[in-house]
Image (cartoon, rainbow, N blue to C red; front, side):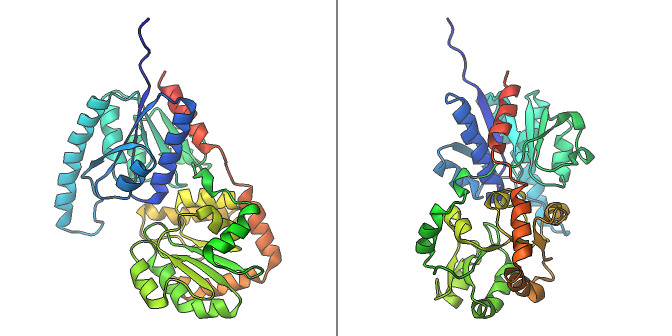
Length: 368
């Protein structure tokens, strides 16, 4: 009997942790469902995925694609040239790998790969993380077989018959638990019975959040806070040289490897509002103050935040208001047990624990 050919899937996208970690979660779920499956990642050259994906045990190839500069710039000539090169390379990668399905998780590389797969008649699946669909995914949706979403009302952007509500996949190792609190306090060098503020500006970092925490660190300490401060890789050297890596009441890190411990010990979390991060925050069930980045397409982080604030599941402070309001908002929230309790209950009610397996099921259905 002829040996059955293994299923083959390309997963494309990346650029930030918000795209990469969900993509790896999907790959892990596919491999768990079918250990013989062949998976190839396609990312953008020089971006984080070129390091993180191989570390997770998967093969990746890079495209020279880059994002357009939104203001007029001659650099966009190079960007367009890179796009055409990436389209040609994507066609070659697809022909060589012969995937049954191509999955797009967002990020620079997702567009060229899904576009070429669709033109070549290969089923494509879009994983739309945000509550507001970007231009690229709306265009790619015309040829997509399925569109996995994490928010209600996405028929505003996509054909309703293609939409499947799955939630956003998250790293399962971030799940919190009481047993992790003692380990977390020891890991970060913190004391018991004092509130812990966790500051997350995204994997690359947030200039606004970092400046605000830097100017407000003494006020936070005066109000009893201990701070775990993830600066992001772009800001770590500057901030750690100014404040030191750690003090009596704070720990500064460029990137937090043990997010499960950080979430477990935290009492309040400040965060950007990327879709993947929000999905993780729902699993933590902790009071959250969202500071949406203004430097993203279609201001989608504000829309992501509003999906939570509309359910009384988070507070939101705009980027422009953050320097004046963010630290006081943290202190006021910590002093209001009723609001903290309500926020925790409501954000936990939005958690979806099996999004990765739901998406994996949809992908496998397309390989038949």
